[in-house]
Image 1 (cartoon, helix red, strand yellow):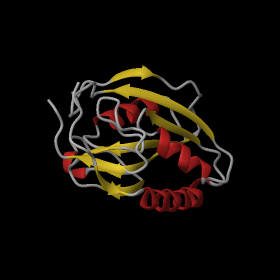
Image 2: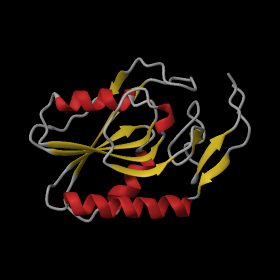
Image 3: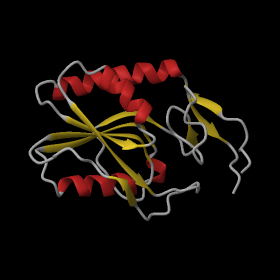
Length: 178
């Protein structure tokens, strides 16, 4: 598999860090007394969630769900599969879902619908990146880091075919091999 052209920086690590702190402040104001269950959507959210929860100075629990809709493709297939479900009970809990990027909204809607069936006390979403130009279905996002242009993003947990997740900045790729 050939690599696409070199990634160009869209958001620097300093911008990301400042945004994570801002989001943590907003979440703290709303959740400090609720002992929430924070659920990260893998794999992309792992860096963002790790940095975010380190900024939250109140009791919380964490779990992860892993869904897939991309495979090696550049766009979501629209078919969502659960690769790893959550194991922590959700009923009557305040749930905060942490997502790296909300693109089409299909994966997030699938996760939210699944969680709602488990009857949480509340459920809200925190995403680092929101790409409204690609939205196929409406999804509620309560905390947003950056509203992004319609570019293919990599770095800080986001990937292309499992590559680039380790970049410390959020970058975009101009050309991606088909």
